[in-house]
Length: 334
Image 1: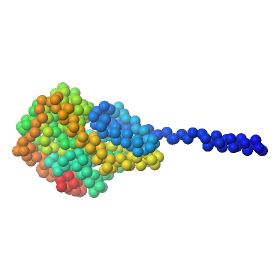
Image 2: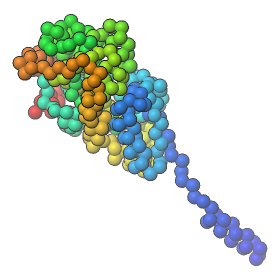
Image 3: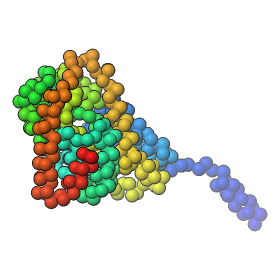
Image 4: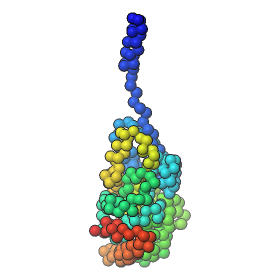
């Protein structure tokens, strides 16, 4: 009896003294279109991912699949839904028609001043227009934020409407109407195809921001920037598979939630988009000229891409039965 009790005591002591191993972190596969060493990845996306990992107290590990290695940018939404990727960064301009109400951000002559202002306005739409959130229901919307102010990067200088007319300009779908109104020829391409298209003369230029010029070294092939064109912006989205989210431990869910929604989107808009303005001094030596439209010339452009296209967009939304289009436009213009 004594020996039995002694063995029990020793067993209990060994159990109590055994090291406690923390649960292994859940690995989340994150799909991204840009290169891992691109400015926006290093300064925006990776810091956001690390922030989520730290907030999760070791319960999450994010595994980045950059440069379209897990899924193509225009297939990422379905890849998340089907479980090929757990999370993905998506350029919404590559998903024409998926969320027509949010395409309002691509109209010209709107009231926002920078990426954070535009992102606030996008979330005002999401909060006030349920139909704008509905297209995201298949996955979990983590963040939705804006590019910074767009400009033209071209192979020859653009100082007037006449210079732009007939030029083949790469864009995403939201800019097609504006470019046609200005007399240019819109060419919808993914960013990874732009460098070669410039090199081969397939396109004469593109609508972009400083981050994309830097990340894809587009200054090698296009040397002129026209920086105050009255064009709209596009949005980026981070989406997550809802089933994967539901299975995460509570600490992991809380970490993701803390870096999601309006607050997480504004953080990304600042780090990923607005801060890329700091790249201009680094890029400028590679360019021949940065052109600023005169007030009179810019007004000519605005007359073509402002209210006429707003009214056209409203009529198109009404034909599609999207009755809250006026509310969405008001969020962008007031």
